[in-house]
Length: 442
Image (cartoon, rainbow, N blue to C red; front, top):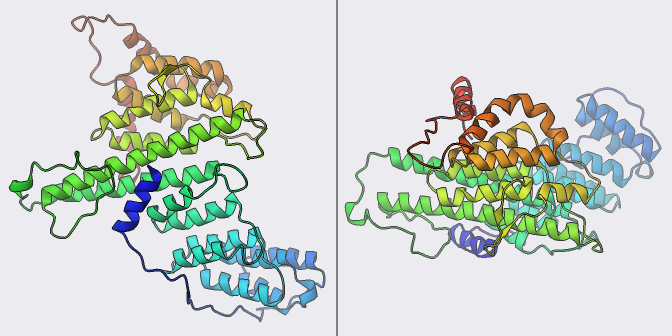
């Protein structure tokens, strides 16, 4: 699925290749300082001096000190510091010039060097940043540097910043399932975040189309893309108003489906690595950031794609337990919660539960009136994540009590009188009313 979508996106949004020769103006590095400094003769002291001066807000002076130092006093470490400093500021041309100066002095680049260069491409404003990043990544083999997943994530970050989902998915599809370049938690988070942003952009486009007062073409008003192949569709200039709306809705559905595929791939990959103790591939971990991206997207599409958004119920059950979930083969399971499995399989601590992700999880179940799911989720959290739940008890106690009472109401619809709005939704609505307009999005 990820591979096919990338292929279609590439066809929709072609780009001009500049792989053979990418020209960008590389400004010379500063060679004079604003005040007089002592120039260390030791590589370690030179690196320390660079950090000291650059942290005082005088980056040009710090670079000039390195430029004035004797070559024997320099090192790959200090040049990596120079490149990284420019990268953090998005100064791509300076970072590339520092890379040239590093090579001219005979210092071999390292993985850290290329990570910094890719960061410069991501944060820079050059129109050629994507092509430069790809050329930089491919040149690692030329310099005898074996790319790691950190370098891959650096390239994906460039695609993310430049909103190029097609190339990001293609890059992901080329990754091996094991070894140093196997996807990491950051890899999946970057891809999921790109899908979420794409969904937001599509909804902005949909809102604009809906507000357009141009008369829709009635002859095609009943046309739908639901029976067409499931792929990302481009909008031609001569497309009617109603067709545009249908296409945008279709692309929202496709992008959200891709997001669900990314999550499913991550969960399967994480479980496999956690149970395969003999593998030398780094294990995957879980933290709330990835889950928040998925659940926020479920909320975003809930009104338009309710059936798809409700798959979030299964994701919550998979991560935290407490609810029966249906796997991809339609089998109902009660396995070990994913967050528990991944926490027990490694020694790296991540945030596995916080108030924000709990708000999203409960909110999604509340929208679907899955009150029993919320009660079982809360019980599972108290069982498996007592330490994380303890500070949240007071915040959610009354609302969980209401959900419990709703779960225990009679099954007869005539006797059951659910509230028009639960306490949880009332509180959320009040918060949205008080919050600035810019913070009201899910």
